[in-house]
Length: 183
Ligand code: 5GP
Image 1 (cartoon, rainbow, N blue to C red):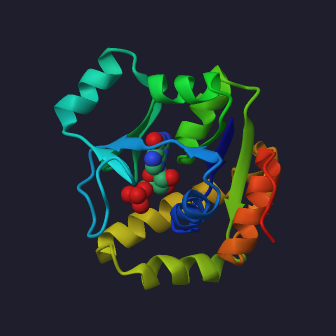
Image 2: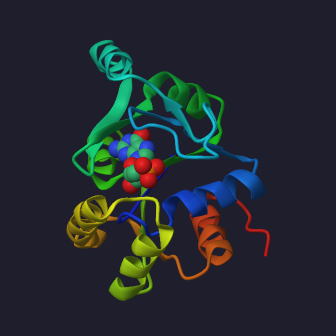
């Protein structure tokens, strides 16, 4: 199992979407979240969109391998049963989660490979966060604060991949996962 974490807006979602499209041999975990869907996001593909009560229920039934409140607002978590099934089937499993979640997985599955997706530079990260235009100004400020703390966690990881170009970063990541890169 490979865990991909990294600061907000570094492009974890873009890199994993690229892998979903180009590397069907990788199994991407679909997280549950209490955040509302953004335009274009599909239930069961990008996330399982659940209510706060449904999320509580998953946690109460010990169905979450890890979960966290991300950016101080919504909850996100990984369904344990789905991941267990994929691991048992011998799939190359990829979890794209935040740093708090990665730390929880390291407690329960220390044998997993932990990969940090890093921005080419801090100004580049700020640019990506503002440029995305999906968050309010207050939300952007909160996410930048989180990102600063998250960047400091890089040394905790087994490997660092710089997201300079999505295809290149994806290719390096799949290589770490034990898959054969396309180019
Ligand atoms: P977004 O709302 O932009 O889709 O994601 C916000 C953050 O939540 C990202 O940093 C993403 O990695 C994180 N995230 C997504 N799914 C999970 C999950 O299952 N667990 C944890 N801990 N974080 C997640």
